[in-house]
Image (cartoon, rainbow, N blue to C red; front, side, top):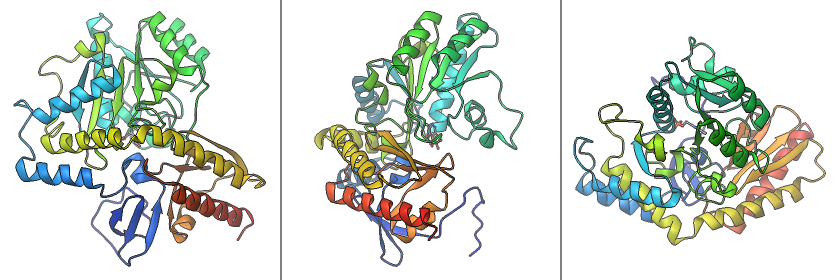
Length: 392
Ligand SMILES: Cc1ncc(COP(=O)(O)O)c(C=O)c1O
């Protein structure tokens, strides 16, 4: 069927009509186990009653006013986020890219305030930060740049998980004011850096007076078994961006800042019509409350460990499997060759997964996933890889 929707996505031939917990149901009534959560968005699963009630209740009272006026839900959500993160203040937008745009502007404004004419931001190879012009320019993947040059200037690249590469930039480039990095590369193939990477990065930023800016858009909101992935390392960034799971599917993005970075954007220098409106903030408040009530951060840690252990066990002996890795419920299975066709094959088996970096199966199941569902994911993934490897 042709459609006037612009052809920016390669779509899979399935249409979902509704969801229940970790399950999505298509128009024919077939049930699919969603091990992807809309790419790390629906952490509470589909149609969680607490989120549904919050959205419906707020929609019946007030959807939008404007950032010309004070917004109670926005203030409550900002308060909650600063308490959970130890940051000072929050700017709200509608997406991950928009949250990262705010971070980029904060870095540049900080540089200008320090008297640097053309401030630069260090960004990692293999990273993904969004599809707007500034965020695609920050992204460390030439495929994302292709066809959209000239790129936005002011980014210098370094190899991920290599502190010495950053030390070299510090020595050679006095215009760098910030580093923007994902705690775990998501789109880049679920790459988990060495245990000390973030602590060393924090120390390097302190030595060079750089802002440490963490893109937690995929890793945040409990996904890795802490509210924010950097909390595993016991460090505090200067800037952190969130989106995806914050609204469980209601669009919302947030850029949190601390200290000097929190002072960078002055009245009238940044804004967003919809950013932080009463509806989106009601959804996000319900998400956080439910995560606290249901202990979902700890659950992500426990269930993630269980899923990774069971996968490692089940896939042992399959010679095409290079590694099972991840943190919490952010999981990658690296195979020895490109395997993008596994996504469609998994759909035939009623399982939703994704492949990144050509050869890494990525799974980001809802944080509410239970042991039976974990068993089903493991069984199906094993069968899927074994059949594919045998050339069936
Ligand atoms: C780490 C990271 N940053 C930024 C983005 C961009 O977010 P959005 O698509 O909401 O603009 C993504 C999306 O996949 C992401 O994974």
